[in-house]
Length: 305
Length: 317
Image (cartoon, rainbow over all chains, first blue to last red; front, side):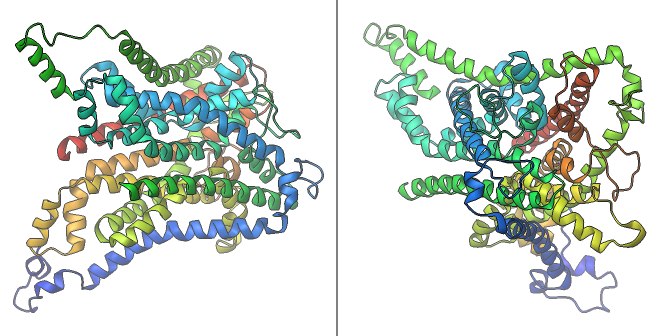
């Protein structure tokens, strides 16, 4: 480790340069300041880009941010009449069913890994490593899985059911990781108290651990779902493309906001770019709403404790 | 928990007959089995991915020799005389990933050092969530931003003969890099937080400045975690799709010039699978061959990253 203490290493000649006081070492000097500015710069690049992106999308989409976006159906020929209603409804349907598939499976997996699994067993370690890897598998690969097994293998086609099953598998690792953290945060004294009173392990989990972990699991699950509804690539691979009707069931074809944004960005007419920006704002508002709910739940429980 | 169980057994052994094992709880076993089955869903997903990728890929390689696929430099699967050399797609992926890494790795590490070692707790509680919003923006919106805002800016900055094409890998790579900053920053910061406070205190006591403590003590001590963060960041760049589909173009290119268009592996998969292609044709199987290669790339990197995270956890936690 190169922890150089001021005078010695900075001053090879010794006497010719006056020794710097110790205070000079902590916080002043151009090296210190330069380094700090570099760190500021690192952070600023991300934050400035975020601000630019948000302002740009809002300004670009402003002319079309009117009720037409919400009430009209997409159109490839008439940009003035086009809206994103079927995409908004498709995204909401997807969100509900992705949650229905991913949350129970994810939470049960988390309970198993935290409360039952013996980490010295190879199969439990395998489940754990497997989840960590799945969390980093590219979303296009999940798209291919959905295409091969669900859409074409089971013959379900690019429907709400196919889309939400694919997205559920995609966010499952995120739900598990978040739920495990929430379960781990429950103090073990609560478990021991319950067991000491004669409750079985499952009674302890169901009546004590899960209620205490619910806010944390809710926060993590909402964040996982907001990742799911922003995904475009897997849906495009499944063959989801724009439709002019709202979904009416699990086997209905559909479109979703990210796919609609992609479609409009690839159109040649500039009116559609404005529409893509306006639709992006709609998607960002939905994500913002979900994140606000997640943060609200987290803050409320933090205050209570 | 185990403590309690042990005590109960001990008590049962001591007071023979009074506190014997309760009647068998079958429901408890059923619950455990159900939970285990839920945990197996994720394993089944991986098995499903491997089967769905490698089975059609194997069929593809019976039609196209593996050597031709891996080393061929022409990619034109839809032409009358189809060529299946994947090198241009890999090159496009690596070029975009390189550009993204040049942005994301240093800036992510810098952000992490600032948040972990410099920022006041109050500033940190605002800056960290703000940075994480970057990771929550849908990638299709980044793609839109790169194509319609950032590329024109680049074309304005770099004029003349060198002017970037409408679709160019530089724009896609740079925006992708910014998108990955929070991934790198958040994991690196976790690793730095795990460095014991005593190491910092010791270095400060020896008269080190904050910079010296950060670069000489904290970063070296957290190195395996930072390496894991870097690898995961690179893995995300390799697998990112929508930004490159929209901003880097859909034409394979063997040039190393980032101002030109390139097709990446993910962009090929997304653009080809999205069309109406018949199951069982060679072009359909091509998607799986490229997907299998992509999966192998990211799998190796993820495993490396998981190992490195384990390493720092073993040392400090």
